[in-house]
Structure formats: structure tokens, C-alpha cells
Amino acid sequence: MQNVSNTQKCRMVPKPIRFEPPWWLQNSHIQSLYQYMVGKRLPLDSTTEIFELIDGDFIEGIWVGKKEGPIVIILHGLLGSMDSYYTNSLMNLLQERGWRCLLFNFRNGNNKNSRLQRLYHMGDTQDLHNIISIIKNREPKTLMAGIGFSLGANVLTKWMGEMGVNSPLSCAVSISNPFNLEIASRSASKTTFGRFYEKRLVKLMKQRLKEKYADIPSSEILIDLNKAYAAETFRAFDTIVTAPLHQFSSLEDYYQKSSSCFRIKDIKKPMLFINAFDDPIIEPNALPIKERFPSTSTVEYYQTGGHVGFIQSSKKQPWKIESWLNNRILNYIYPFLYEQ
Image (cartoon, rainbow, N blue to C red; front, side):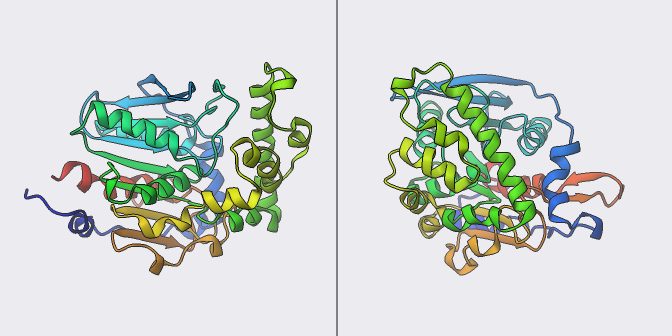
């Protein structure tokens, strides 16, 4: 097959089958929670690689699949890991198809305390850049794609914009991206169910914080832990912990500099964006209008789908639940990695 430009390849992506779940799967909370509550976590034949960073910290990467060939890099969402339903199911599918993938565990992720006090956050693209650079240096001819979920989607999108034409990824996929953190941070508190999600996630974030700081002398701690443990909203936690710990001058400074919506215009490589208007965590007005995206982007906004949901019933077995999202992701990235 003759070489073609990224824009040409973007046009060659097979036309997707639109997400149209049956009526009994259109509830946003069913979409968001079904696989989390009842989905099976499947065994993965994985190996772990520790990537040493120049600041003395480390990143844990989980490899699944073949030892050579194109690489699919996966960025999990807030508090995610290889055991999260969305990463586990996608990695299993990639493994079954003989593909090669790397789950990028953010600092202090997967219950592994990083050496430094800093955590990961919505705008932290430097670690992703370092890991991709390491892989590219040792495998300069290997094709790569990136897939980000929620927080990971914001990080990946922001980085793709920062890199522009220099991104070493052939393509990327963003799922349930919050885009505008100022708007998204207020979204969860506006509804009863939203407050439920927010309260649970903040509780888990504080639990992770306690584990991290358990063995650090109080005189060396860089944040006010008592105030942090009293936080009950994303905005309160980010004000007390995220912003000061990562050298942002304020909450507003953190959200402004970390929101991927301000970088989408600079993305030059093909990228797929999937969001749902009924996402219980991200309200619709946080999503950029489609006209703001570059011509190489494919933007799919659906009326339903929840947060990292997009499940449907099988046409052959209506009682069987399957992931439309996983199939859509593979449908999109395949031409960029295998049809050269």
C-alpha cells in the first residue's frame, strides 16, 4: 500500500456504527455503573516495567500481548488501574487479537506510592512525554497509538496539542474527556447522583492520600493534611492538595493550565473523541463545539452513554451485554497501525 498523509489516512477510517443502545440500556447510570458493578475482571498475561524518571521518581507500566509490533498505550482515569473494568476489558480484547499494549500507571497509581510527594493530576503531560520518548528511542520504527479515559483522556488530548505535528503517535482516542476543568469540576455537585459520584471519588482520593503520607514525617509534608481530609468536593481537594502540591498559584490557575479544551486546536495527528451528553460527571457545556476541532479529528457526541460506558446488547443475544466502545476504538486505530 502506498504511503499516505495523516489527513488521508484519517479519511480512510471505516465509517463507524453509531452507538444506539436499546431502551433499557439508555439510562446514564446504568451505562456508567453496569460494568463496574457486575462486569468480570478477566485474567491478563502481563509483565511490569518500571520506568525511571529524571527527577528520581518512577512510573509503572503494565505490558500485555506480543513482544513486538505496534503498541497501544492506555491511560486510565482517576483512581484507575489494570483492574478497572474499562482498561481490563480493552486490554483483554487487545490480548485476544494478538496486539501489544502498555497501560500507563500514573504516579502513585495502583496503590504504589511514588518516591516524591507529588501525585498525578489532570494536566500532567510530562510523565507521559517521558515514557513515550523512552519507548520511541529504543524502538524508533514502532508505530504507536494512545487511548485515554476520563482524566487520562484530558492528559492525552492536552499532550497531543502540545506536541502538534511532532507527536510520535500515529493516532489517539479520547473517551469521556472533561475538557474544561472549571466547568467539569462544578458539574458533579449539581445533581443528587452527581454528588454521589463525587463524594465517593473524593473519599477514595483522601484514602489514597493517607496511604501515601503515612510514613512521611509531618515536618516534611508540603500540604495541610487536616484540611485535605476534610475536603468533600473535587474543587476543595484540588484547592488544598492538587494546586499547591504541583506549583500552581491557585485553583483557577490549575484548571486553566490543565484543561485540554485549550489545546485541541493545536492537534495535528488523527484523533477520535467520544463523549455522552448524559455523562453524570461532565455536563454538556463542558464539551467543545465540533467546529473547534481540527479537520484530522473525528468527534462523536452521543445522547446517551454515561461516563466511560457505551455498552449495548448483542444483536444475536439481546440478553448479553457487550462493549460498543471497545469495538469502536479498535475500528478506529486499526488503519493507523496495521494498514501501511
